[in-house]
Length: 115
Image (cartoon, rainbow, N blue to C red; front, side, top):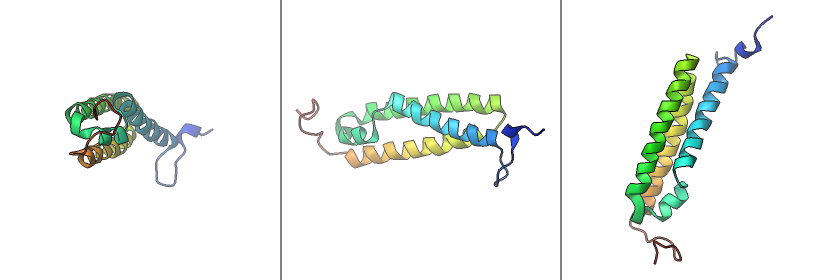
């Protein structure tokens, strides 16, 4: 009887590869949400806190690299790395855009930074 976890998909991967890709991508998104405020908040406060905000993006990336690397090594699969790179690149681009878009703008009225 065939192992259902090793079924081959249309693109030549197997279900374990697909799960590893998805889990790694989700892991990266969760790390960023645990260590960073949203890109929207980053944009709103970029002028006052760009250095601090970017520091936490880098800390999130470091954690993601370590944990995705462990997944790839233990699973002996490239798929966690591919999932982590896709999600990490998307998050990096969003925070880069937020910091650039918010540079030079005043924080929102009513916020501590805007007073």
